[in-house]
Image 1 (tube, one colour):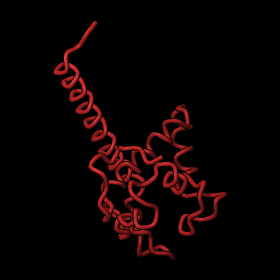
Image 2: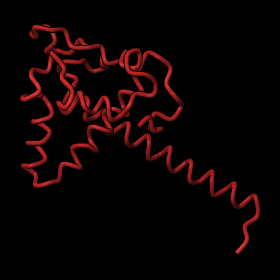
Image 3: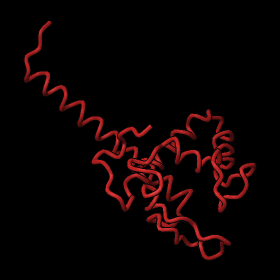
Length: 146
């Protein structure tokens, strides 16, 4: 079977549009998860000024500046390690008791789901965080950095 150049170009455009739409859905889901799990400390826009921030011993990080320290685009694997407790964050407590790593696990275990769902949600949070960085990010925040 042969395809002409126009048919191939149309196929590429359609696949790209589908990937962009899926990427937008992941970012939107990531924002929803961020608001649910992170905004109380890190603020609705990630500036570190959430409603609980003033009651904490250590000011939450301004997550809009992560790319200054960790590069652009943010590495999903690297940032996920902070969220799930594999990487120590002083404000999150000791590694043995990360704030959200255990909480995420408890939530999905109670629902009878696999840990993969947890990693999927964390990935979407990182995809959202890519979109709020003060340093310019690539046009496609779902592009792989890992």
